[in-house]
Length: 413
Image (cartoon, rainbow, N blue to C red; front, side, top):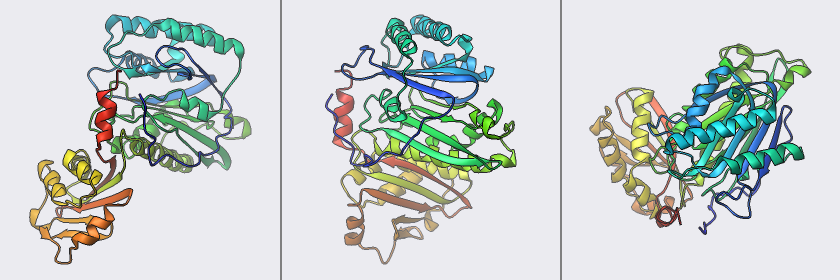
């Protein structure tokens, strides 16, 4: 499939230095793709803590089931990610595949299978031959080489057109710590607990329970506030790993998510997850516009988010953006269908700084010419005030173009 580069592809990638406690490795398995690495293995030091959130899909993949079963152990030694086959809706074969990979990885890492975590992305319904993965893992562990984090991220890509990586720093008790994050995703993006695939690594000494508290909190305002096409993947996985290497520099372990010493780390993690989530949307399949949708004046923050998602998921709103049509009536439609409290006669809508609708009707100062000019921007801000309360929320989406149809009409070819 010949994918057109996203117009939002970053011109520069952040520098991501080696991170104590983690050794990323990649390999070309040849399972689906030729001439590129399609397997990521990250070996982790003993004592690495783990947290995760996963898809709520009732048809989730075998790797999701595996991770959910073993995450309670709280400890990780290896992450294994393959691209090209989702190992989803593969029945007992899928279970045997993840078991084979988990047991082989555990033998190589000299640990329990419960300390191995996996994720798969690609076509649904195709049986996965675990020998592609186990053979490649064995060669990687024998070679002992590692790759940089950009190369690690590239190995997880499917229909992505650019790398999605981010890094942040914070300090705990005056000791600097680093957070690296990678993500992949371009279509089938309407996360429900997580994104398509994203992994966060830090040298901070944060216990599994505290790490879980932070991850669960910040996913709601990052990945769970994004949508490309309203479709939730069977494979949605967001995991965080903390090696604790900063303890050697005098940083005491954080055991609770509400520990005041973790505040700067929490803020940095929140910002990093938002950066990754926005990159996923900006690489939405066929996307040419990035839309930030804010809803204010709702009955609650939760209600505001539901209305914002109704706007963001509307094919009419998304195609209007693609066609650079300032059709704010489609926003009115989406608010009305959302099923949340809204005062029609107090409703107000802004595109950027321009108020287009006011008190339930077109703003008297509305200019079609000015509004149409604004829609030519690559990034568009839409704000709606419902007039019934103090709740607010922001979600991010992209437009819907012919490119999306082309990519998905030819996905398995």
